[in-house]
Length: 391
Image (cartoon, rainbow, N blue to C red):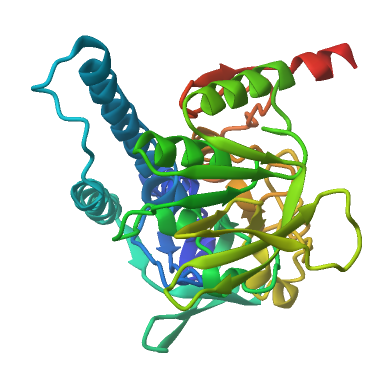
């Protein structure tokens, strides 16, 4: 239980970030009698996309990704039935606009549900951007620029991360990311996906599944960190089902054409010169999936003395999710070296709250956590890849 002697603070626990991990920690702590508040604020993407409470997974990650994936599989199944069995009553068409409306409506219902859950659990919600003044004090700024100062005994950083666009000239003006594709009002059309991560291949998979001309530009290997035999099987399956791959290539710059398309310049990945390369092609959509950066650099952590990696936007923590400052913790994708998985953030948030306010001592076990890749042929794994096992 919280110590009544700490009533000098406004809150026993203040959570920065309203994603899955932060929400789980806040509700667990409140159930244990703590006075808890959450601040969540989404900075628009370079393309202006924003969303509601719930974090990446709910709004622009796991949930819409799986819905798009299932929709693409349904469209492909209809096409196969029509082609192979001549079931002319089955239509193979796909309505992008209707899908976006349905997915957005569903996610909006989840956003509302999370707000309601916070209220019913007596957790105060601030739709504000939080920055540190000192190790116990935060400044909260809402969308109108109004500021509130709050204090807390413990502060939990659960801000997650955002896609980076690689720093290529023209990328911010011409390209989108996973922050944008699930809210895109118009069909993607001819699409280039840059990257070979699970986000890249999942996105390419459902875009191709909807019938759009799709190319994936790969610098080196597919699905780094996963079993490479399985990664290549996924790539081959996607190629056999219409996705094109441009191997060992990197983009160099992007330009808008007069008709609003994107002209892409590229060169060999082995070319380390400053050459701009040559025109690779013109696309309706270029989706960048070359990595993510944690949001630690946005929080004025220096004011609280919290150590973090400015380049990666990540915070190092100990086995108890504690930063170098005794009362400040971090969980989820903003943590250096952390598994970027929603169930991991949820469980670590719950267990942290139980240690802080429930007298528990058990630490989160981050070993042998299963994960699934929702490419057109789905792949799940747990434990070591074959390569790591051999090493």
